[in-house]
Image (cartoon, rainbow, N blue to C red; front, top):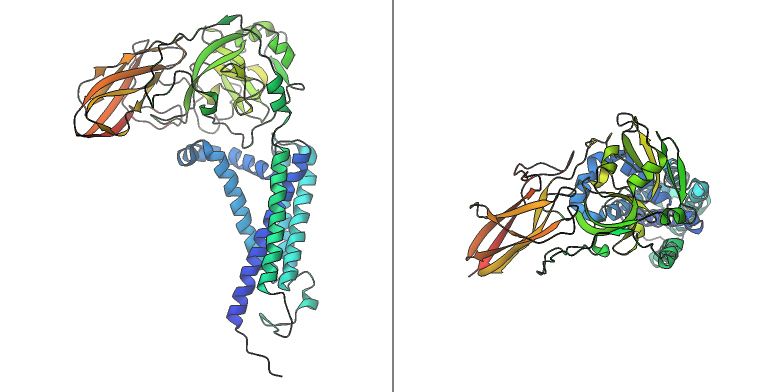
Length: 527
């Protein structure tokens, strides 16, 4: 009998794409299985997140603004997706390698596990107790799935007995599973990996934190600043109080820490006379105040949305420092988070009369997990990178020159006062001719806004009408009635704070201490 001729080139291509598919599925299985131990143990971090956290710590300084510009508040999702995609691509390469040497490919998958193990062990926000289990589970799953699919291709660990090779061409007398069978087994393995990933995610879904927040009754404040703001209700203009669900979130945590309030402790120490520790219940038993405060991210571009105004409930930071008895040399307040993040600001900021608190509530409800439950720092007038520690666990007093917080060695300014800024919310793009409201918000937290002006087509500055505010720590809404004529127009705005200082027109990037410049929009008016 004469065997039909085979096409060596086509045969090689067929095997390679099958090998790539096998590697992708195996890498996916390794990633999914590696998440299970940490999810079962109730820990928020798994190997993928730990690798992402190590990446953030290593490259945060150079990529922070780029990531926010490209992905906004989805920068963390983009990083995790990127890690997964790169892992799958590497898996494809290992699958092709396995066609020649299964042992080398298995070593490659083992290296995946080792990288995850090292990341979990070195990541301060990850639980080390399940690191080995996560690495072993992921590695075993990946190698097992790769072996299964290589067997379907006819190139498993027992190469010598499954195939007789002539160069790089299969012997056509050896029967190997057809394409449909291979794809079916691959699809089944991929579905199992996907279900494992979904299962791990569901285990991390609704946690004890959600139940605690639902049951928590916030204490009544001993002092509350009533809003009583003259709210501007124009479609598209930012509300005076930002809804919690719309409030921006920028931090270094890839996965929101889930902190059990029952085991949580707040330590106050360092250069103090009487260090102490509080449980969450003990913190809630202290006198709390309620104040609206606008906070902003230093990465906010001129006219950007990384700023918001909320009503915060918490214990005045000055009360905690008074109880501890700050020594004269304790010139810096350092806030430490459960995920290892730190901030630092001058001690006198906490005692100069501005709103500075350990917050436990936001807009009338317990802090959401995304915004720092069970407690966080809020300091009016300072960018979040030097003040707004979420998931707060420790307040330490140090000398200002003795400690640099997280972002300072990464090139950001050690002092981070919020720049006076204004933003045009409406109009945008196209409007009809006639009287059109030009409106938005302006902020100079702790100082207050005295005036906002608008310029049309580089014309003279015209005053806008300011709406009232609850205090100097919040942003102010403003509006200017513009008699819009047909054509293309350029609109600018600028704010003057309560000290008489007008925001500069000079443009600067957010790094190292906040963006400057005037917000400008282009509008087309229809005739």
